[in-house]
Image (cartoon, rainbow, N blue to C red; front, side):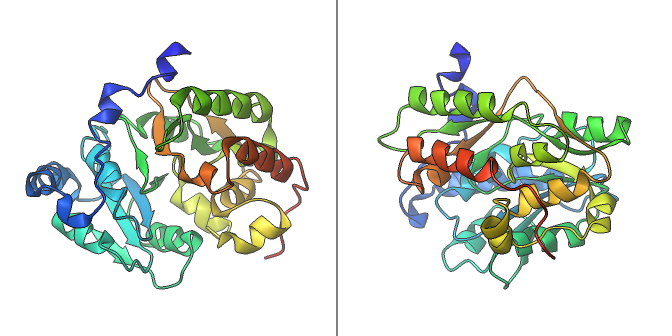
Length: 282
């Protein structure tokens, strides 16, 4: 547990901080562009990494930097879906040489759906544009799906990168409490543990249940966003499985702080996910 108290060096290496787009060094763009070459012109990809992005110029480079070091044995394509950004998100993608799509319908559910529909891979890895990924991220998720046809969804563990004013120790306590509260969920209810920045499924399975649904209606009626909704639907076809790996995905704590405080974030999540788990109308 102590190893989670501190941010690993490999995470720090990608945690590029800048307040303005023009502060990003040209050399950093060039390095990422060079490393991204493995994702360009991939013939017959087996895996598609989908990343939605909406006004992510302050965090996107962290995600791209980490994914550029991905060492998957699977032929992998990377697709970032620009969800109508008004900042320098597209400029960052272009300068990093990252293939991208543009989705004008506002909402992460629309962006994920567009990316999935355009993906050529059999397996879809879902990432977010404010997270940092270890080099072997996704391999164990795809291995599990490939070797277990009864498993529909695989997902992993995560940790939070503290924003200014937050301590890593407080975030670790939040993570541990959340794990204790939600880890015993099984069957369809395990869908609440599936978070959009760190899960995988087969494209054909997702399309068979309608794919992603924009989460506004789901949040109001069931507490599930587009990620949990899809996992909940796929659970009708088979299992949802947690896959533990040596390194976790690290993500920003901004969504927690949107609730006002870490305590409020945990209370709100408990309140939402102990409520009705019945499916929302389509």
